[in-house]
Length: 487
Image (cartoon, rainbow, N blue to C red; front, side):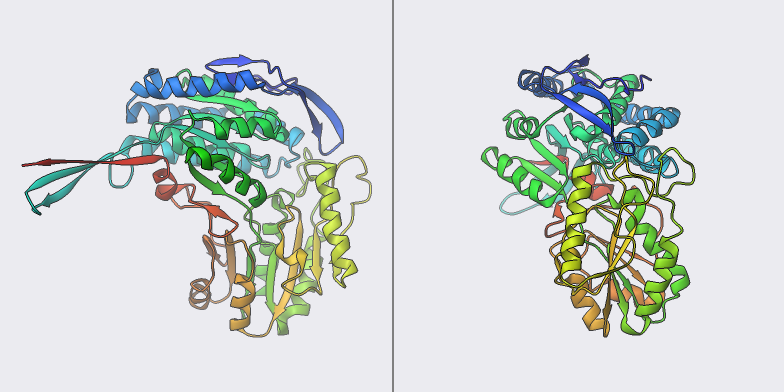
């Protein structure tokens, strides 16, 4: 597989095409050095990509494949991801800064797992089946009915930079399993990794037009979302951009699925074993340098345990290695850009000005002046309504706040505009009962377990609309047709 460390390209109508838009500069976030320049997809090329997806769905070879054939292609893609693990991890470390210690899981193993689930889902169909007979109806005459679940059409799949292959597994996996054709729009910060992934899509043998790749400035996304040939948009990113996606899709009444941000609570119940909870909690908000929408960045601790929790957390966070993504012992790599780090440092400065304390971290690691690194950081001494306790930072910054009783903890946990994820530590029965009261799309108990391909991901409020993954996520990519006839 071509490594795409030289220059990426757009993939349009089954051909790799050098963009005719302005160049995108790829910077290695660990060194601050330029890696390559990649021309963005130009407006005419975007139009061609959309048209190719439309033809593929409306009568091209892709539209004629059956469920089992779609499943076979998706399984082949999962195999290729595993076969090219080293290359993909290398590109991710170079372009995004993901440490090689976590890169295989984030960029290969989990996406392959989800593609395989959707491959099997394509073969068997949605839970109710591609065709579902209804009971006879006798009012006012006897009739028979059949529900047909048919692919939604041309799907615009828009992914962020942090885990673009995983997001593609959620979006393309479900869309292709359902029989939709796609236009994949990746972040300009992840053109190399996404291009490498789409190279594997090509190698897997997907028919022309089933998957098209474009990228560039916001105008590229706007052109795809507003195109009348596109039937559905699925987007992962910030709530701010998500609201713009909704507005852009509104004039053509497209179906829209949004997986947006989070400021997720991590609640420590009385009686929790802090020796177990603290390390796992710290890793949950520092993984991928905190650049994860589901990171549990707001920890709520009983007042009686607060000081011990902070002491244990500070001690553990100081053991985490920040540095070169290619070093095997590195846990935290850089943030994606200097601009993003400046933004996070602005949040920290404003919090300190308002009286916040940082018992550990809060600065730039010594000896790492060339990249965009930030120390793993704890923030205390802020109320729940503080900016830093309410806004998503996308960084290894965790806010820890005390609560007085469980009613207080529930109110604090739910008093935020996001509702994507949560975790509860404590005796299992108590933790499950507490979790029932939380407004969140996902709640893990005592750390939960591995990411399940058969479970949905997403949440209400500013965390989005609809779900990704599992049966609920698969269902998003179908339209239901009712056939009825008299007997």
